[in-house]
Each structure stands twice: as structure tokens, then as C-alpha cells.
Amino acid sequence: MGHVHTDLTLTNMLSKQSVNVRALVDTGTTYMLVPPSVAVELGFDIEEVVMSCVTIADGRRVRCPRIAPIEIRFQDRVCNVDIAVLGDQCLMGVIPLEAMDLVVDPINERVTPNPKHPEGPTFYALGARNIVSFDERFSRPQPLLPSQSCPKSA
Image (cartoon, rainbow, N blue to C red; front, side):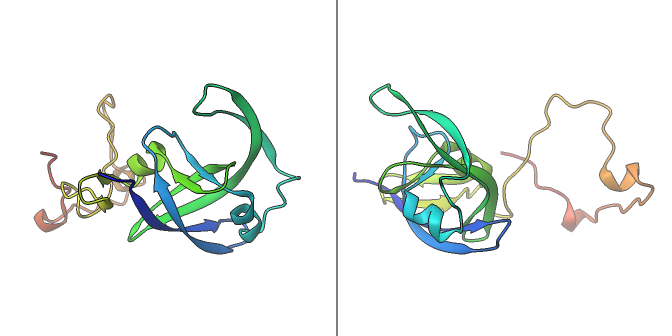
């Protein structure tokens, strides 16, 4: 088994500037990290953005720029996140992986959409009670046809 890399498109949601990147998938990383050159390509002045503290692999906490809002796209899956500007390569962590419902396949060294949810990520509200759908709440009942219903989770 080797390292898993994947191709992503990052988009600055304010300026709409996009960049395609190849990221190392790192399940020990929480969010996404990009080097300064990618932040600049996205149109950010990294001297003028919010600073955040990040704990790195050796346990030290370091301050680094944080850019937002950024859309991460993998195939037909997207999520919006803040990204830390640090290091010399792009790292994709577990938050974007989970938000886009992606699966890391270390044997074949690839990332794929979760085969249990081919239609896209599933949002869970297991603790919610007495919830009405958006359409019911706003007096626009639109019953789902059986073919439109959300599939049951396995």
C-alpha cells in the first residue's frame, strides 16, 4: 500500500477563481491544507486573511493563514470549507472526505464516492423529533413519488 492522492477542484466562492490540485489524502488531518501558492492562485492575499492555530504532526501548534469560503469538488460531490495555508503540498483531511461521503481505498490507492450512497452524501438528523419537511413547513406539500424517495441506509 502506498499513498493515496486525488484530483480536486478548489473554488474561491467570493471571486469564483478556481484551481485544480492533486491532494494527498490524509486521514490524520482534520480539514484541508494548501500551500501558499494555491491560496494566491485562488485570489487570496495571505497577509490579509484570518490566522488560525494548527497542531502539526510533531505536536507543535503553529499559526497559519486560513482562507474561506472555499468549495472543494470531487467528481459530482462538493463541500464548502475553510482551508489552512500551510506546507508545500495539498492535504485533504477527514472533514471534506466525510462531507462529500467519500471512501479511501488504500489497496487500490484511490478515493471513490461511497457506493452505499451513489446519489450523494446523506445527512443524518437522528436526534431530531417532530420535524416537518421544508415543503410542508412552507405550505408547499410536494409528496415524493416512490421513485423519488431517499433510499434507506444499509
